[in-house]
Length: 601
Image 1 (tube, rainbow, N blue to C red):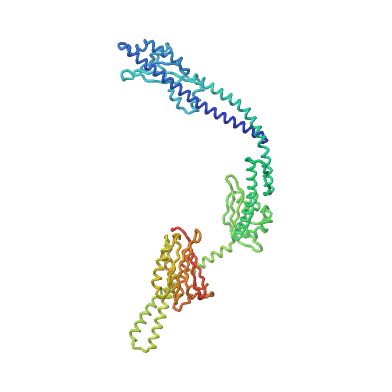
Image 2 (image 1 turned 90 degrees about the vertical axis):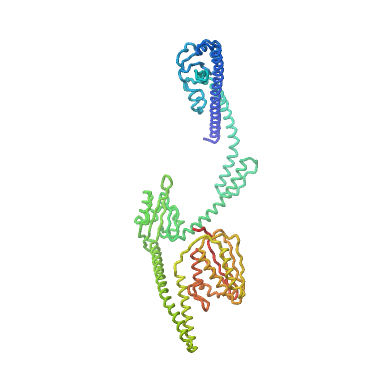
């Protein structure tokens, strides 16, 4: 269908929908109003009959109450006139307590038992659908009842019957009006649809031209400047969309190139296939398996690129046909000019209904064996560390005994020659130095239990700088703190960080024998890390030694053991941080520590 016919159909359907909906709403409301009005009139008439019944009983106190009601002419006239007064009322009656009719607008029914009918209030309370069904499914009778009492005790009841046939007659007139309105609205809707189609098709064709220009890539084509309605705005928006699509296309190509670069760095091969086993994408690691560059292989069937005897073909076919993945199958295949063993996994890619393609992962077993060898080597190194730690413990005990006996020899050889005294001093000093080396080695080799908790790094550094300043200010060293007040708390081991930063502060002070400024600065680097720098104005470190200072046992101090900075390096690593050193001979040294910002576990 053309747009004009579609628009006429849509307008017609909308007109029918609006008219039909409003008609149903109107009839629903009207049916409730009619039912409520009939209930109100019935209750009003019932109260009038009730008042006349009380008057008839009071006028004949000596007579039986039922006889008084039967013989009262005014009451009978009221019952008969009430039926003519209300257009919905079918009958009116007065019944005794047992339900036997005393008075009825139809005299031949007096003395009979009054049949039970549903309450008129129940019809009012029904939902619109149920109320329509009750009104239009045959002729039904509903009653409005009012209890009649005598001297405070139940005496009988007044009942008024309402016929659905009479109610339906009133609703029929409104229904005919609604149908007449619908008959008038449809021709008017057709005329309006033809006019709207003529007015809207012209700018729609212009917009189609704009879309066609965008499809051809003419993003800079200017829209028609005439007019200023919504279609002109839409035309301008289409032009803006075209320019944005052009920019997005360039960005997508750039991101695709970056993503391909990242995937190409993977050691594992990745191949994406369509449902027909055509190549969609693969990375550099899989290029040797496919045998062609990606640009030449895209769109080609895998069966044409691999020989029939290639072990990869049945594996992929099974994953696509069976709909089940195959994981870590060991295959020997030709990769380039060599034959390798690979772990191959093939997984179908499916939506909610059918398989759309497959993904093939290729792992070279040689690289896996290399990793396993490294893991085994690391385990052996760990065992060697435990062994050397035990050896260090065994060395420590004889050293303690040697220190004790050297002190005993000093006491016993107080009168010995000066050369003997100096020799004992040298022996004691070397033993103590060796003990410090062993102690430091034990601290370095001992496994560290890191207890993470939330720490205010500024407060930790402030408490440590106060101790360092009190110790070193007599030697001309002043401490300058530049702590960022907005620094967030970090998750770290308080004791280990104190040990690390105290070591850095002590080293900085020892590097300034003539005094100077020790500057401590903290700052936040983005949302994920913070930086702490410790700068001194000391003698500096030669450039050739900067890459050695964190190595175990390397030291430039005459009495150093080469463990302090190695221990600092290890503590920072345990916190997933990094430490760097920058120095200039005679110009001082700066130690920079970066720590991650993370929540305590």
